[in-house]
Length: 389
Image (tube, rainbow, N blue to C red; front, side, top):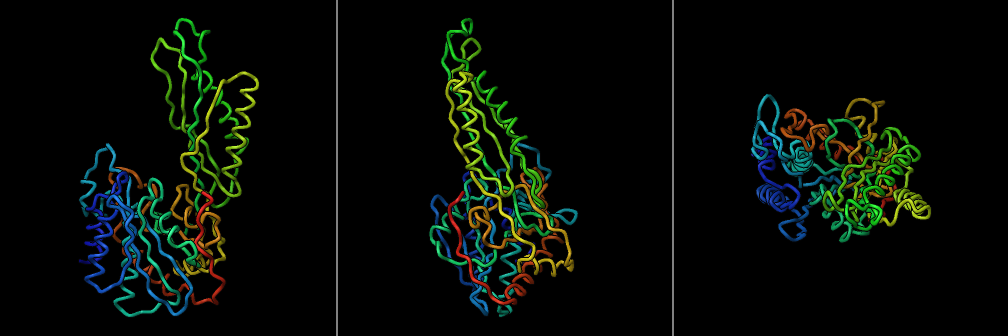
């Protein structure tokens, strides 16, 4: 099975999350490892879910981690020109759910490591390939890895999310909130007898609109923070004053913004509305909390990537989406490179594809990254970091 056939095989596996079924992808890796004689580690997470690891001992104990996730989002209800689990090849592209996000990057990393093993090439640093479950929902795989490896050191982290072959040094943080307002039902013809939770939610949304401006921050190369109300639900029926209303907000942050400070500031403003008797009761519940991460361009892993791109002064980029790096490296203490062959604009879209040439270039890029990282003088290792998210 050549490099293209291997990616096709991964794309033909339905690992949509939920439910995930990432162990089906793990089995594809295991089958290839057995064929090539490559040792591996399997960590079961239950319900046909697992993490998969390979480690190649290097010339030093410096630790380089290559990380990617095995799950994808669902194909959705949009129309596909090719079946989302076909791995169809057309016009120099390979199509399928996960082609860009991120089975092409995942396969590229694995094949780079496999090639080094088969050629008996020993890298300067010890290299671990970690394929995780659950990144698209709750990062259960990354969290399980941390639980088992709390003191394991990581000197540099490479994540194969889609970057269109650009050198990405960080991503924005993500905070998802569910906010509820409460009231009291009454007959729709007698609104004065009730407390209208929908009316009160309009005041909450006004507070969020004000905070969107007050709290806005900008950090290169990540760009601007953002806040959007993305869902709303409330009411019983047309002739009943509603006693509950809920919204969900998607907040994207940049350093040094603090998610906990945002929540406290929001609660303070809503408490003021209660004191002024403008709203009755509320609740704020964080649904997802992922910090931003950002790496200095002077770090070795970024410098090596730049040299491989033959552009020492190349521009560094940031991305809006979050990665497992937010779990593995929540305080940006581990130098992290995000680099993959996929195009982030195609992620989660119908007719997702990746350029075959970009995919093949990524295999060589990851291989050369492995062979060149760690040649500089070893610095103090950084333990894998859990918590804080």
